[in-house]
Length: 158
Image 1 (tube, one colour):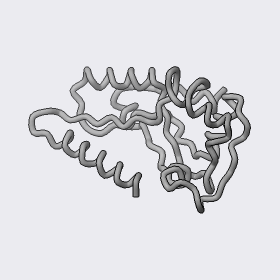
Image 2: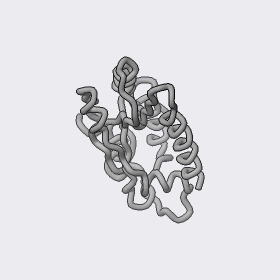
Image 3: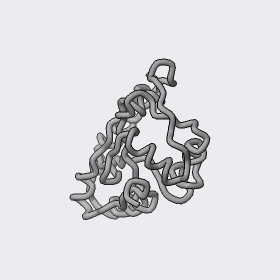
């Protein structure tokens, strides 16, 4: 319910942006940021929590994450800011990946132990949603409009 409430709030904001009669509305939906200074980096908060085994794979880990490097997000933002295009664009990597795949690879990349597996029952509802139901995003619309290519995830491609 908590996640659904947040999604509803975003939908309302997006609707306002896109329904303007005087401006060309643009909505950029970014993936989870990674890169220097972010949570998903070897010195970031998620890496620290993974090292402490505080980030489990909940249930089947089928929730799919889309990430984006902060430099790629900045380049994408600059590209659309200088264009005349409007609409909704996903600014994400090319590899939407299930938690069960990316989290162990991330743990290895940051020299952490393998994440524990826990049952959905008794797990935090928000974490359960992200681990089991989150859907990845496609960046194909943005890539086609701007001839843009994000870098691959380092923990899946090293």
